[in-house]
Image 1: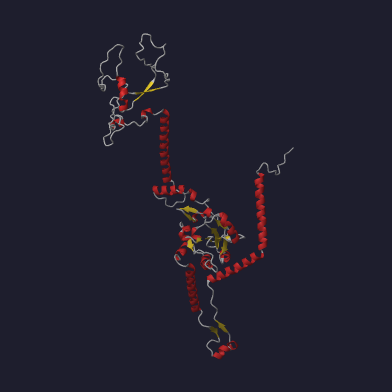
Image 2 (image 1 turned 180 degrees about the vertical axis):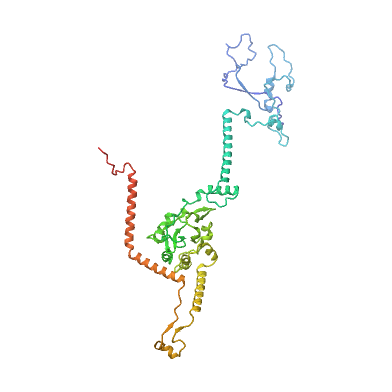
Length: 502
């Protein structure tokens, strides 16, 4: 078996482009054959030169093609010339003046090379990769920047400089701005932090700076303001598949609102939205006699992901404001004004709301100058139980003092006589019995408030229908005025036009 070898000097393979097919007969026609050429000499037709494309491919020597190669390299002889015996064929010698259009294919890999042998193609060096040590990225040099690019670069630099200058001016303004009424503005850094926080907290504040109108003149204005929550304090809401949403009114809520409205300005302050809380609030106070003002979710603040009721927006003196709530997070800004009570979940027979009436009633009766120290004294304690103990102790002290001043069971002429004289003492002389124990100041004011509460309830019961009729007429009148004002502004409303003078 012969082992094929790579031909060291391969001849280019010529591919004919758009070459017409030669005639079937290899001999030329008599018209084309010259007359002086003998018939014994074979004539091979030569095609005219055509455009060729050289393709260099490694040619492997094949024993079947040896004869054809020998015929190609055999010299041509003239007629009558003696031909010398043919010598063995040898590969042509390599000459230095080879044509430049023949490429060196010695570096190409062999088609039947041994995989264990090293590759004949050399790896490119670092200089070949980088092009002489410099990597070409395709980007233009800096000096080749167009005029439009330079213009935009200038604009960007000016915008950045303007932003930095504006930020510096704004920081200086915030560091030197003093809020009106501020007692101790502090250092420039403190003023900057306070003013910057106020600037960024704009959208977390209530819609109005004053949530309540100015207080009424005396004696119409109550001295204290009591803020109550809705869900979990006055009512409880639940949902099921059978009935949907249902709202239950807490036991004693009517008495709580009606009785304490004599001592406090009761304001409903809930974290629920207006469209869900307002219908419930209207049913709790249909005549708007006990809840003159109502504040909803829109009046709260959103601080650190929590809903907060900021009492500084109430337009009331905080020394006379009490916040009654079921969530301590709602009073994160003014915890000294808050009383946290347990949340009502809808249990029947509950009296937790009524238990706070004596404590809140005493504040309205005694009228302390500041309620915050009193709330602080009851911090962490059960206020209804603790206040009942203290009230019982004061009552006992008053009784003991009165007994010391009014000692003895009987005072008069019959005192000191026998038992018969005591029985018939009224016949033998005048006697005076010890007066009954007096009522404390708190008990007297409480009796007056209870009497006034009963009179008010009797009045509402007698005139409820008349009041409802008047309220409905007033509502219809307001709707008509609102509709007329809106239609009057429209040119196509068809309303009465002003008379034109002739």
